[in-house]
Image (tube, each protein chain N blue to C red):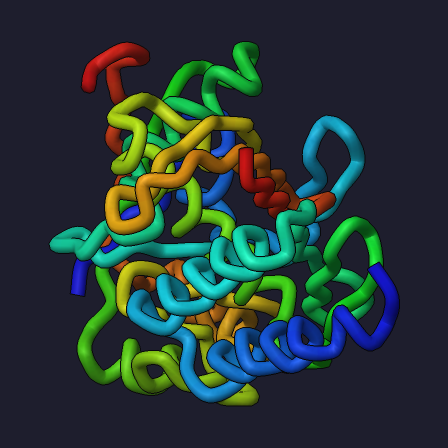
Length: 130
Length: 132
Protein backbone atom coordinates (compact mmCIF):
# COMPACT_ATOMS: atom_id res chain seq x y z
CA UNK A 1 0.00 0.00 0.00
CA UNK A 2 1.54 3.33 -1.07
CA UNK A 3 1.22 6.28 1.33
CA UNK A 4 2.11 9.96 1.01
CA UNK A 5 3.24 12.57 3.52
CA UNK A 6 3.31 16.23 2.45
CA UNK A 7 5.98 18.39 4.01
CA UNK A 8 9.03 20.49 3.11
CA UNK A 9 12.15 19.28 1.30
CA UNK A 10 14.29 19.61 4.41
CA UNK A 11 11.90 17.58 6.56
CA UNK A 12 11.26 15.02 3.82
CA UNK A 13 14.96 14.31 3.49
CA UNK A 14 15.30 13.91 7.26
CA UNK A 15 12.33 11.51 7.30
CA UNK A 16 13.75 9.56 4.38
CA UNK A 17 17.04 9.10 6.20
CA UNK A 18 15.92 8.54 9.79
CA UNK A 19 12.22 7.80 9.69
CA UNK A 20 9.41 9.84 11.25
CA UNK A 21 10.39 11.54 14.48
CA UNK A 22 7.76 12.38 17.09
CA UNK A 23 10.39 14.45 18.86
CA UNK A 24 10.90 16.67 15.85
CA UNK A 25 10.70 20.26 17.00
CA UNK A 26 9.02 22.95 14.96
CA UNK A 27 10.95 26.25 14.78
CA UNK A 28 8.63 27.55 17.52
CA UNK A 29 9.74 24.70 19.80
CA UNK A 30 6.58 22.59 19.64
CA UNK A 31 6.82 18.83 19.10
CA UNK A 32 5.39 17.04 16.08
CA UNK A 33 3.64 14.51 18.39
CA UNK A 34 3.02 12.04 15.60
CA UNK A 35 3.21 11.34 11.90
CA UNK A 36 0.44 11.26 9.32
CA UNK A 37 0.20 9.29 6.11
CA UNK A 38 -2.41 9.53 3.38
CA UNK A 39 -3.20 6.62 1.06
CA UNK A 40 -1.82 7.59 -2.35
CA UNK A 41 -5.10 6.62 -4.02
CA UNK A 42 -7.13 8.74 -1.63
CA UNK A 43 -9.70 9.59 -0.54
CA UNK A 44 -8.36 13.05 0.27
CA UNK A 45 -11.18 13.98 2.64
CA UNK A 46 -8.84 15.73 5.08
CA UNK A 47 -6.71 17.37 2.42
CA UNK A 48 -4.26 16.36 -0.28
CA UNK A 49 -0.63 15.78 0.74
CA UNK A 50 0.47 18.15 -2.04
CA UNK A 51 -1.59 20.93 -0.48
CA UNK A 52 -0.09 20.23 2.95
CA UNK A 53 3.36 20.33 1.39
CA UNK A 54 2.75 23.65 -0.33
CA UNK A 55 1.19 25.31 2.71
CA UNK A 56 3.96 23.99 4.97
CA UNK A 57 6.61 25.21 2.52
CA UNK A 58 4.94 28.62 2.53
CA UNK A 59 5.00 28.65 6.33
CA UNK A 60 8.66 27.60 6.40
CA UNK A 61 10.24 29.28 3.36
CA UNK A 62 13.78 28.34 4.35
CA UNK A 63 13.17 24.59 4.14
CA UNK A 64 13.68 24.06 0.42
CA UNK A 65 10.11 24.11 -0.87
CA UNK A 66 7.29 21.55 -0.93
CA UNK A 67 8.01 17.84 -1.04
CA UNK A 68 6.19 14.58 -0.57
CA UNK A 69 7.50 11.46 1.11
CA UNK A 70 6.32 8.29 -0.60
CA UNK A 71 6.46 5.12 1.46
CA UNK A 72 5.13 1.67 0.75
CA UNK A 73 3.84 -0.65 3.45
CA UNK A 74 3.10 -4.27 2.71
CA UNK A 75 -0.48 -5.30 3.42
CA UNK A 76 0.82 -7.52 6.22
CA UNK A 77 2.73 -4.68 7.87
CA UNK A 78 -0.16 -2.27 7.41
CA UNK A 79 -2.44 -4.75 9.16
CA UNK A 80 -0.04 -4.89 12.09
CA UNK A 81 0.57 -1.15 12.43
CA UNK A 82 -2.75 0.40 11.45
CA UNK A 83 -6.03 0.08 13.31
CA UNK A 84 -9.37 -0.85 11.75
CA UNK A 85 -11.12 1.91 9.81
CA UNK A 86 -12.87 4.36 12.09
CA UNK A 87 -12.05 2.59 15.33
CA UNK A 88 -9.74 3.78 18.08
CA UNK A 89 -7.38 0.91 18.75
CA UNK A 90 -5.03 1.31 21.71
CA UNK A 91 -1.70 0.27 20.25
CA UNK A 92 -2.24 0.94 16.55
CA UNK A 93 -2.25 3.97 14.28
CA UNK A 94 -5.58 5.79 14.07
CA UNK A 95 -7.13 5.12 10.67
CA UNK A 96 -9.94 7.28 9.32
CA UNK A 97 -9.50 6.08 5.76
CA UNK A 98 -8.32 9.41 4.41
CA UNK A 99 -5.47 9.61 6.91
CA UNK A 100 -3.50 7.33 9.17
CA UNK A 101 -2.01 8.93 12.27
CA UNK A 102 0.95 7.26 13.97
CA UNK A 103 1.71 8.34 17.53
CA UNK A 104 3.97 7.17 20.33
CA UNK A 105 2.23 4.05 21.62
CA UNK A 106 0.04 4.05 18.53
CA UNK A 107 2.13 2.39 15.87
CA UNK A 108 4.88 5.00 15.59
CA UNK A 109 7.64 2.97 17.25
CA UNK A 110 6.83 -0.01 15.05
CA UNK A 111 6.79 2.19 11.95
CA UNK A 112 10.18 3.63 12.90
CA UNK A 113 11.57 0.14 13.47
CA UNK A 114 10.39 -1.00 10.05
CA UNK A 115 11.39 2.22 8.28
CA UNK A 116 14.92 1.22 7.12
CA UNK A 117 13.47 -1.69 5.16
CA UNK A 118 10.54 0.19 3.62
CA UNK A 119 10.56 1.34 -0.02
CA UNK A 120 10.67 5.09 0.42
CA UNK A 121 11.42 8.13 -1.72
CA UNK A 122 10.98 11.90 -1.88
CA UNK A 123 9.21 13.79 -4.65
CA UNK A 124 9.83 17.52 -4.93
CA UNK A 125 6.87 19.68 -5.96
CA UNK A 126 6.57 22.98 -7.76
CA UNK A 127 5.63 25.70 -5.30
CA UNK A 128 2.59 27.00 -7.17
CA UNK A 129 1.29 24.06 -9.16
CA UNK A 130 -2.45 23.55 -8.53
CA UNK B 1 -28.09 33.12 28.80
CA UNK B 2 -28.51 31.15 32.03
CA UNK B 3 -27.65 27.54 32.79
CA UNK B 4 -31.21 26.27 32.32
CA UNK B 5 -31.44 27.76 28.86
CA UNK B 6 -28.14 26.16 27.96
CA UNK B 7 -29.18 22.69 29.13
CA UNK B 8 -30.52 21.46 25.77
CA UNK B 9 -27.32 22.54 24.13
CA UNK B 10 -25.22 20.78 26.73
CA UNK B 11 -27.03 17.61 25.71
CA UNK B 12 -26.54 18.49 22.06
CA UNK B 13 -22.81 18.99 22.65
CA UNK B 14 -22.58 15.69 24.52
CA UNK B 15 -24.35 13.96 21.64
CA UNK B 16 -21.98 15.53 19.13
CA UNK B 17 -18.93 14.35 21.06
CA UNK B 18 -20.36 10.87 21.39
CA UNK B 19 -20.40 10.75 17.60
CA UNK B 20 -16.61 10.84 17.67
CA UNK B 21 -16.39 8.41 20.58
CA UNK B 22 -18.21 5.76 18.58
CA UNK B 23 -16.46 6.11 15.25
CA UNK B 24 -13.86 8.31 13.61
CA UNK B 25 -14.19 8.38 9.85
CA UNK B 26 -15.25 10.94 7.28
CA UNK B 27 -19.04 10.50 7.72
CA UNK B 28 -18.74 10.72 11.52
CA UNK B 29 -16.48 13.77 11.30
CA UNK B 30 -18.86 15.45 8.84
CA UNK B 31 -21.74 14.68 11.18
CA UNK B 32 -19.84 16.19 14.11
CA UNK B 33 -18.98 19.34 12.15
CA UNK B 34 -22.58 19.85 11.06
CA UNK B 35 -23.73 19.46 14.67
CA UNK B 36 -21.37 22.29 15.62
CA UNK B 37 -22.86 24.48 12.88
CA UNK B 38 -26.35 23.63 14.13
CA UNK B 39 -25.42 24.60 17.68
CA UNK B 40 -23.99 27.89 16.48
CA UNK B 41 -27.17 28.52 14.52
CA UNK B 42 -29.61 27.49 17.26
CA UNK B 43 -27.76 29.28 20.04
CA UNK B 44 -26.78 32.28 17.96
CA UNK B 45 -23.58 32.23 19.96
CA UNK B 46 -19.97 31.62 19.10
CA UNK B 47 -19.45 27.89 19.34
CA UNK B 48 -15.92 26.63 19.66
CA UNK B 49 -14.32 23.25 19.92
CA UNK B 50 -10.82 22.69 21.19
CA UNK B 51 -8.39 20.11 22.48
CA UNK B 52 -7.44 20.52 26.09
CA UNK B 53 -5.62 18.01 28.29
CA UNK B 54 -6.73 14.74 26.64
CA UNK B 55 -10.24 16.12 26.14
CA UNK B 56 -12.29 17.65 23.39
CA UNK B 57 -14.29 20.57 24.70
CA UNK B 58 -17.25 22.37 23.16
CA UNK B 59 -18.07 25.85 24.40
CA UNK B 60 -20.65 28.51 23.61
CA UNK B 61 -19.55 32.08 24.22
CA UNK B 62 -16.70 30.61 26.28
CA UNK B 63 -19.05 28.63 28.57
CA UNK B 64 -18.35 24.92 28.56
CA UNK B 65 -21.25 22.96 27.10
CA UNK B 66 -19.56 19.59 27.33
CA UNK B 67 -16.14 18.00 27.28
CA UNK B 68 -15.18 14.42 26.74
CA UNK B 69 -11.95 12.57 27.41
CA UNK B 70 -11.14 10.39 24.45
CA UNK B 71 -8.16 8.24 23.57
CA UNK B 72 -6.27 10.01 20.77
CA UNK B 73 -8.33 13.14 21.40
CA UNK B 74 -5.68 15.44 19.96
CA UNK B 75 -5.32 13.40 16.77
CA UNK B 76 -9.08 13.15 16.39
CA UNK B 77 -9.57 16.88 16.67
CA UNK B 78 -6.62 17.37 14.35
CA UNK B 79 -8.49 15.34 11.74
CA UNK B 80 -11.73 17.21 12.40
CA UNK B 81 -9.96 20.54 11.82
CA UNK B 82 -8.39 19.17 8.65
CA UNK B 83 -11.78 18.04 7.40
CA UNK B 84 -13.30 21.42 8.27
CA UNK B 85 -10.62 23.10 6.14
CA UNK B 86 -11.50 20.87 3.19
CA UNK B 87 -15.24 21.51 3.61
CA UNK B 88 -14.67 25.27 3.85
CA UNK B 89 -12.63 25.15 0.64
CA UNK B 90 -15.46 23.24 -1.06
CA UNK B 91 -18.15 25.61 0.19
CA UNK B 92 -16.24 28.78 -0.71
CA UNK B 93 -14.39 27.50 -3.78
CA UNK B 94 -11.28 29.21 -2.50
CA UNK B 95 -7.96 28.09 -1.10
CA UNK B 96 -8.08 27.40 2.64
CA UNK B 97 -4.94 26.66 4.60
CA UNK B 98 -5.08 23.30 6.39
CA UNK B 99 -3.12 24.79 9.29
CA UNK B 100 -4.88 28.02 10.16
CA UNK B 101 -7.47 30.13 8.45
CA UNK B 102 -10.60 32.24 8.81
CA UNK B 103 -13.33 32.17 6.17
CA UNK B 104 -16.93 33.22 5.69
CA UNK B 105 -18.95 30.27 4.44
CA UNK B 106 -22.50 29.64 3.34
CA UNK B 107 -23.44 26.01 3.70
CA UNK B 108 -25.43 25.08 0.59
CA UNK B 109 -28.07 23.10 2.51
CA UNK B 110 -28.74 25.93 4.98
CA UNK B 111 -28.07 29.11 3.01
CA UNK B 112 -26.99 30.85 6.20
CA UNK B 113 -23.64 32.59 6.50
CA UNK B 114 -21.11 31.60 9.13
CA UNK B 115 -17.68 32.79 10.10
CA UNK B 116 -15.33 29.86 10.59
CA UNK B 117 -11.88 30.11 12.11
CA UNK B 118 -9.58 27.28 13.02
CA UNK B 119 -6.04 26.49 14.11
CA UNK B 120 -4.54 23.09 13.41
CA UNK B 121 -0.87 23.01 14.38
CA UNK B 122 1.23 20.94 16.77
CA UNK B 123 0.56 23.64 19.36
CA UNK B 124 -3.20 23.94 19.05
CA UNK B 125 -6.29 22.27 17.62
CA UNK B 126 -9.34 24.48 17.79
CA UNK B 127 -12.22 25.75 15.71
CA UNK B 128 -14.69 28.56 16.12
CA UNK B 129 -18.03 28.83 14.33
CA UNK B 130 -20.23 31.90 14.43
CA UNK B 131 -23.53 32.58 12.71
CA UNK B 132 -23.26 35.91 10.91
